[in-house]
Figure 1 (cartoon, rainbow, N blue to C red):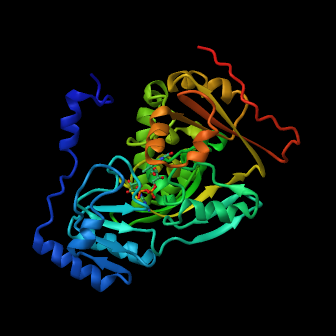
Figure 2: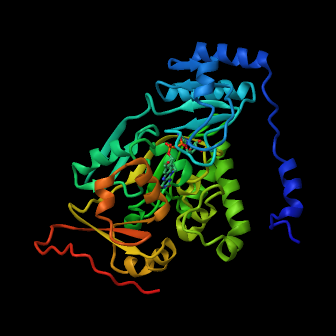
Figure 3: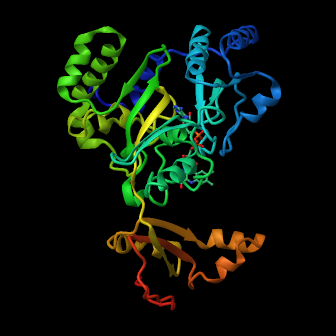
Length: 375
Ligand SMILES: Cc1cc2nc3c(=O)[nH]c(=O)nc-3n(C[C@H](O)[C@H](O)[C@H](O)COP(=O)(O)OP(=O)(O)OC[C@H]3O[C@@H](n4cnc5c(N)ncnc54)[C@H](O)[C@@H]3O)c2cc1C
C-alpha cells in the first residue's frame, strides 16, 4: 500500500498527526471571554442561555459551545479568531444554522454572521456578479438580483433562512441547481481568514500567477505551494478515483485544484463546512432568471418510479426539479396543511415537480390530467 491511499488501516496514523485540541478549562474560557469583550465591538455571549441557544442546528446533535460572538464587522471576526488562537480554542462560523448533520454544533467559539455581516456589497449586472458578506440570507440576494432579471441558482428549501456563508460551507444545491449548478459552480472568489490570522482573496489561479505567488514567499506562498504540491502528488488519483458524486460535501472538493479546473482555491473550499477557513466575503456568479415560468407536476405509482423518470424530464431542460413522496403528502394531510394544493396533485404516490422557464408565457394552456407512466 502506497502512502497515497487513505484507508482504514492508516487512518489512525494520519489522525494522530493532527494537533489534538484539549477542551478549554473553565478558567481559560473566562479569560477568553474577557479578552473577547475587550477586543470585539459586537456581542460576546458566554451566558448559559446563549450557549444553549447555539448548542444545536437543524440536526439531532447537541454540543454546548464555549461561547458565542456576534461580530459587527470584519475586524471583529479577525479579533475573535486571534483571541481564540491564543487559547487554542476551536472556532465555528455559523449562518442560519439549518444544517442537518451537526455542522453547526461544536465545543467551539461560535461566530454568528447573520445579525450584522449581512450586506450585499454590490451587484454588477453587466458581468453578472454579486459581492456579498457571508451572513446575507439567500432570498435577500435573490430579491436584489431579480431587479436585474438575474438570480443565484442554488436554492435549498431553507432559502428564506440559509446564508451564503452556510451555503458555501455545505456546497448547497436545491431545486434550481439543475438550471445552473450547485454553490461550488457559482462561487467566483472568496475572501478568507485562516485560523493563524492570514486574510487573503482566493479564486481561479493560472500557472504563471501561481508561480508568482509562490515566489513572493511568506505564509500565503506556503499555502499555495503546499496546495500545488498536493495537487501534483494526487492529480492522477483524483482524476481516476475521486468519487463521481454530484455534490461534494463533508470531504474536500479537491477536484477544483486540478489544472483543468483552474486551480480554483475558492471552489475547492466550498463544502469544507468551516473546517479550513472562515469566509469573510464572497463574489458569486449570477445567471439570468427566466421571467415566465410554468410548473409541470407528474404523478407516478411510487417515488421509485418517479426517480426512474427523472432523466426523461431532464432531457427537456427544466429550470427546477424536485421529487416528492407519499410520506410527505400523508403527513401534510394528517396535519391539515396545504389542503387546497394537495387536492390538485395528479393521481399517484410519487411526484416530480418540474419547472420550465422562458422569456414569455405561451397563450396555450392545457391543465387536463394525462395518465401515462412507464414501469
Ligand atoms: C427542512 C430543510 C430542508 C433543506 N433542504 C436543503 C436543500 O434542498 N438543499 C441543500 O443543499 N440543503 C438543504 N438543507 C440543508 C441546509 O439548509 C443548507 O445546506 C443551507 O444552505 C445551510 O445554510 P445555513 O446558513 O443555515 O448554514 P449553517 O447551517 O449555519 O452552516 C453550514 C456550514 O457552513 C459553515 N459556515 C457558515 N458560515 C461560514 C463562514 N462565514 N465561513 C466558513 N464557513 C461557514 C458552518 O460552519 C457549517 O459547517 C435543508 C435543511 C432543512 C432543515
